[in-house]
Image 1 (cartoon, rainbow, N blue to C red):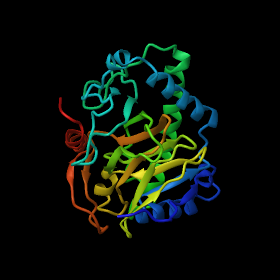
Image 2 (cartoon, rainbow, N blue to C red):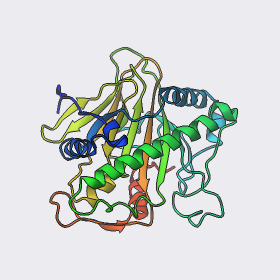
Image 3 (cartoon, helix red, strand yellow):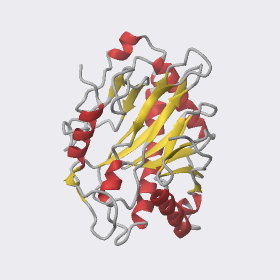
Length: 313
């Protein structure tokens, strides 16, 4: 299985956002999700200065001493916190992934009806000045949630039947920013699996790549070959996850992707995972052909998926 020269579609979402060409955007995104399961998004309105600051936050956090990061170790029930390098193996049979990560979600207060249920809880924050981490990362997550919500509406419009199909799923979504750091490779020409070949567990992922730090590859479904995804400033890479693949019975594709890390310097990327309301029941749609049928809550799907990927101590 090799690599091929093929481009993931680039789609401008601004005609949807300003109302000047909504049907055209729906058609383009639907086509990309049916064919590739991936597309590149421009015209999104997320301030570029905020994108840059999010990367600065990642660098500040991962520069902290290991003991400070480990004090914020991920709570497997809420999903928040720090994951050290080697704690996850996304590709079965391969060595653990080399990345380290820090996840931030909605800070759910104790008086919230969902507080304490799976993936709903409080964030943990590093000992950094608030204006150097907590405030900009909270603002970045707010912008990303707004953008992901618009993409979910577009995907609903691209489905047969009612455009309200995902409304319950979108009512109280689990949606999180995950800062990722891949350590440098020791020699030029070396390569490791920064993240093994995998499909994302959730509904959609919006990935911000650091310009000049390539490594993401997508498996072309029809040709069984890997497509390198370029790193372009002010562009998000969007992909379908397993939730929508199963729910739409394969109408929208969730495809394998991986990170091949060849950098001799530190590599950073920032995915935003839109995972939806955990209590929503996923039932495969009957009038679309394709994937395997499923009937379970979103929360049960995530507990099953994380249990397979997280390495046990």
